[in-house]
Image 1 (cartoon, rainbow, N blue to C red):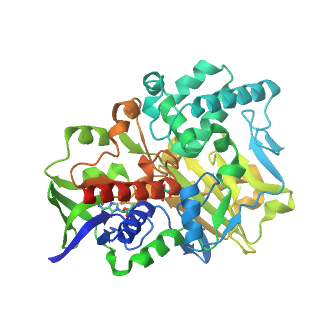
Image 2: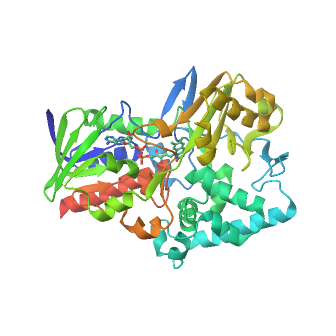
Image 3: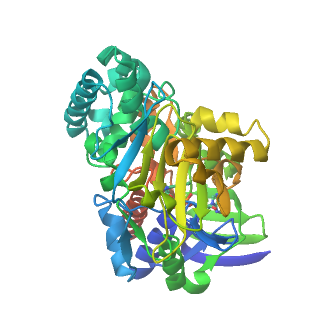
Length: 453
Ligand code: FAD
């Protein structure tokens, strides 16, 4: 068995782990990053599929993502705006396709009034939430024991208004049905992005992309660490005491260190054998966190044909299989790319049919927005993170009903020398790359405090 000794061992070469490793290294500590996969980046993965560069994982950068923006600029990466000229399209409850501009969908005037009223109400509530401590909100207990769907039912009898408001958090963000998470979890999601209005505004939340792909962030962070990033090293044992840790991987590597950072999705902790076991609170907590599930669909055409019709490519409908879709054409590419998303129960259903039928149904849904030309892409690919052993869902993890108030405050608390960092436990930037970077920085600061004392 190969043996190494370091000050800190980091499990996971995603944005969180690599940020932590760089911060610790800068402060003079020795580190090693152990990554299960044969690549770095985790949920950031830019790849070429049938000649098309695709962002298989995360890709968009929004103005509130200050930590990510700082990292992008520090790494010398260039960004560009998402294409947004022309009309967006919306398919309503009546099945009719309507064009629109701005943020509010073209619905009946009374539904529009309800949507605007709910957005204002949610913005007010979100303003009272500290994304780092949502459980401290005076109504936290109450809001955490009611599902977001039930909460919306209390607010308005207007089904289409509810479906649209739910979409921004459920299908589009937590990627779980609105009855499967609490109203408090919904408020945290919005608070982590600055406001509910930010989630409604596609031009804000899906603002920019990185030229050449967002995976360059982890790739460049890993480059700085050189030989201290080891691939193909799934960690399966963590032996710990007050004196430090001994980590064992599936590839016969043993690392002794003063601290370990588990920098991966919290739903994966139970796959590691802890000696001694983690405290009972953590063991309970980890059973109340689960990943959402979304299929990200990429369809590349020989040109962005929708632009000829004056369409921006932005499309929404709570009633379509692909509940949202965008022009995702790469910087400087003559071909046109659409990206669509199929979430939660719709995604479950699609994995019950053959790959051919799945593709046909998804393209059919895209054609409802863009017309028959959408049926025949030259490249087609589905990002299926549910099948990825080292992620097991997308985009990220959230608590079940009541879990946030019951366990949230302890999610990041270290256990002896074991520290935790991941986008899935961030306040600001929760579920996003920005949150991963913030958590990487925070865990490094906490370890440095501990190392000095
Ligand atoms: P991860 O990226 O999951 O990294 C964890 C790493 O740990 C992985 O590399 C994994 O292989 C490794 N690992 C796990 N277990 C072990 C083990 N036992 N031993 C060793 N290694 C292990 N965010 C945005 O900001 N904008 C977007 O547009 C966006 N879109 C997204 C689209 C999709 C399809 C997905 C999946 C995510 C998207 N996200 C987006 C979310 C964003 O990608 C993630 O929040 C972020 O990348 C998570 O980073 P992380 O470092 O916290 O975790």
